[in-house]
Image: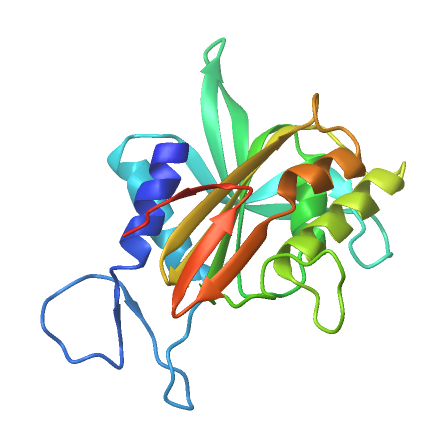
Length: 226
């Protein structure tokens, strides 16, 4: 899964924008918005990811109904959908191995983490950020808008603190794709070894600084320095 995700992310930064001068053909572009800017979303990355799966004959499904029930808004518990699911084979049958959610921008992640923690598997969260500054990823003391990883931790704590929420995941791998300057940051939490919010916070807390358009990142594994 790592190789497929990293290939898709690296291809993502190569796609053209609708606002660009056309210099060559490529099948996928970032569309422009009504205001004339460029839309950055998780949808294009999901298309590239699925294309890599098809190239490598890896069985997968999209918008896959969850096996557990969830109540994201406090109403009745219902089945949700996983953005993509990868399968293996056991006893001549397809078996779900990896549940994957895609996200873009600093937004709300509650339903994503409830599903990734609730569904059995070695799961993944793939997150696109157009750019970062010194307050984007993580701050120990939070004032104003919450950084991305602080929101991750908030949602993880909420799932762990509610005995009614299923916790069947084996692991969750986090991929943060920063487009400018380009970085792919990766980290993993394992249910067996990081089974408390305090241990998870220690693992995910990321010190970082941004100077003159380039990022210096510590605490997570990073790839794609160029």
